[in-house]
Image (tube, rainbow, N blue to C red; front, side, top):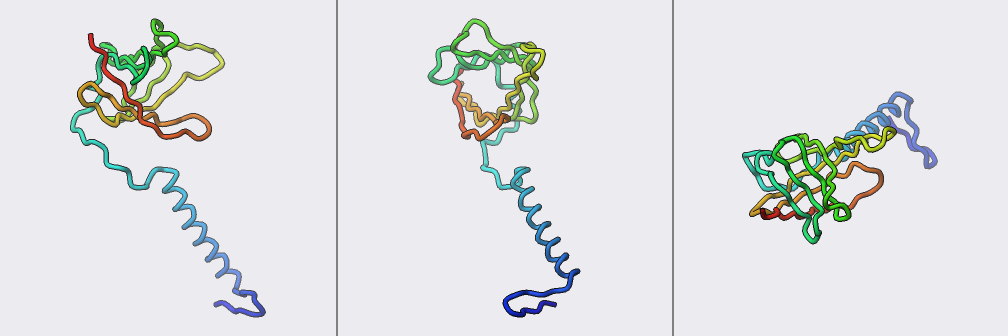
Length: 155
């Protein structure tokens, strides 16, 4: 199978190809587990009901004046408020991917040459008017994983 002569390992060509193939398969399997999220996940608050049924109203980002999200009575629209433009929210269409993950996509086309803005959020928890969201980063480069807290605005 293998011969060691003068510090060199000699083996026939078919065995060499087999060893390389096995090495590549093991490497690809390991990489794919990391790329496609097959690593164990932290257990998050379990709910039997979807957050899409629970999230209604205006939620202000903790520490902000008016920045936040307003889940409107029209189930598929979310108003996105920035502190600089409190009276002029951007309108987004919401699509729930599962019971606690949703996508927001721009409704209004701002620039004909650019695709719509898209944000993906996972609801970490919603207790007593406190909504915790984790943005799942879809942009270029690295992004520090954070959980933002939004407080339901009283009427």
